[in-house]
Image (tube, rainbow, N blue to C red):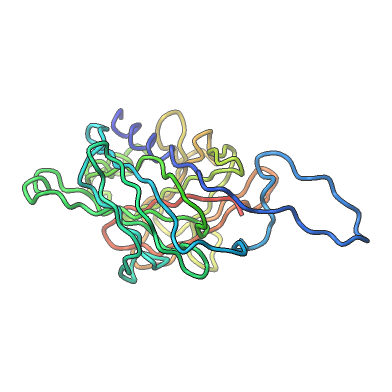
Length: 280
């Protein structure tokens, strides 16, 4: 249970260090001027995210790798930025960095006309002996919004199959052969802080109910709960036992019923997936 709590704590640490360059709505002179929005969702417009007027040719990502087994940082773990928006189209490499002795790397990522809209892969480039001793699960990291500025990504955990089975078991599922087709999601507010009291939906297109045999969960009291209905202060939730090769939408709604973030991804077979839900 302690190991499961560590895994969830690292996932829960995901936060947004990106500057959210979202201006206030423009009103016509004949329209009564509304007071500026306040509170943690003040930047939410209800509209699709509009790219800034100028997009830099590259942004810098800073990423750190920690092993779940002992929670120590690790050198020699490579983060690869892929231009594709999902994880089964292959990977057009637009940036790559390998962690140093501190377990951290900062590397440039080439953007496109809409910013960086791709995903990150964590590559295991240890020796064959190390891989055989402790094989790691392929890990994919997504963002619900395109990125237009430098981002310091909180620690990324690298896990084994046994670790993933433990996560499933903590949510009340059979921890044996739990599979890898899970999505974890963390919602952050306009301050970049994990958002509490947010409901997540991870669905197949044109559906309103969780996929058959899937298990939605939220972080609660240091572990995964299948009875909770919204996020706690960690902003973390997800769905277990999904089907690889399919596209899933991920959305988050606050207590006022406002859709505060929305993204999507296609599950790669035999991999663990995390998505950071940024407000829009």
